[in-house]
Length: 70
Image 1 (tube, one colour):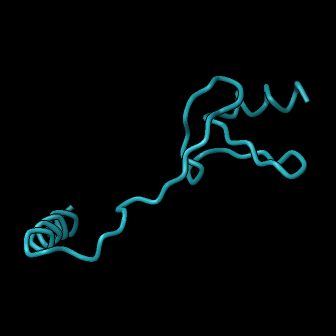
Image 2 (image 1 turned 30 degrees about the horizontal axis):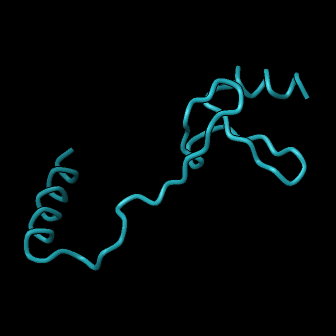
């Protein structure tokens, strides 16, 4: 917690003084769950590969429902 707070302060100082080169802070890709339509991060979601396509899911229930219907 202390380290996190320290780096938040240091990051604020760096940003105030001109910051680092322009680049997105987060480079997370999003995908839509084909079962329920929820948007999920491809990094933190459950995946299922079907042929050449990878599908991303918000939960085990959605992934199982999709797999059952295939």
